[in-house]
Every structure is written in C-alpha cells, then in structure tokens.
Image (cartoon, rainbow, N blue to C red; front, side):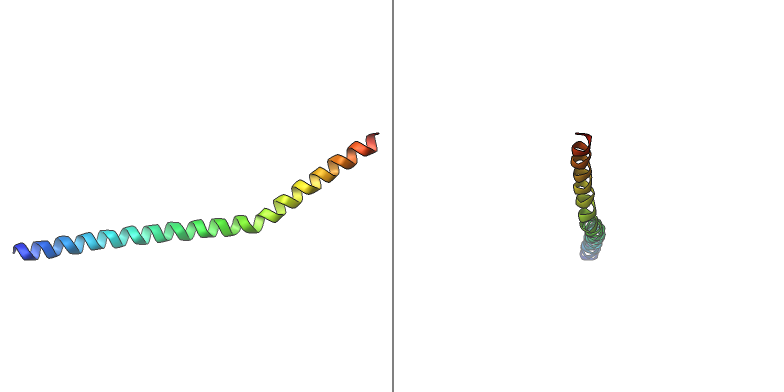
Length: 64
C-alpha cells in the first residue's frame, strides 16, 4: 500500500506540473499574439508621428 501511495503522489505531481506547463504555454501564446499585433501597428504609429511633425513645421512656416 505504501508503494501505491507513492505512485499516486508522483502521478499527482506530474499532473500538476503538466497543468502548469499548459498554462504557461497559453500565456506565452497570448504574449506572442500581442507582440505580433503591436509589431504590425508600430509603423502606423511612426507614420502618424512623422505626419504630425511635418504638419507642425508647415504650420509654423505658413504663419511667418
């Protein structure tokens, strides 16, 4: 009976570790998706900043 209890404890430990790894994997997948989305939006944000700067400079020169 003692040997059987040890096997059950070991199986429980392995199941818990497996659950932790699956949760970590899902977390990493979500982070990858977020970074991928941000990577696609980054050029749009840069373009918006450049356009704003050009508009500001043009506005300054037209007021002179």
